Image (cartoon, rainbow, N blue to C red):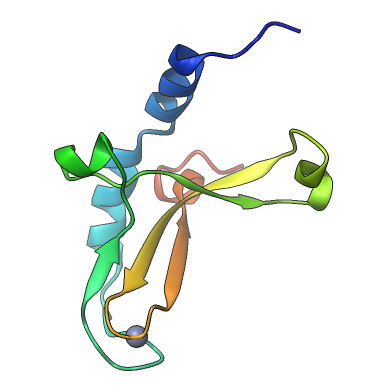
Length: 101
Ligand SMILES: [Zn+2]
């Protein structure tokens, strides 16, 4: 099996179309208050270089525990944290972009 490099990851993330998912998320979420503390201070999780561009960095939810031993299917998500209580919500990127089967 060929080794993966940074360009493989960049293409993978590019194909997820996170900016489109983030745009649709912002259109669809109509009740923004945190369900646990009532605060409206959501912070989209992002790390360099995405944070410099104002876009989310993808996070992943394991579909099953095989990833403990090696690669396994996962769900690409956008994570958003409450700035008051720390509650983290996640939104499925494939559903947001209409690619979910
Ligand atoms: Zn909260």
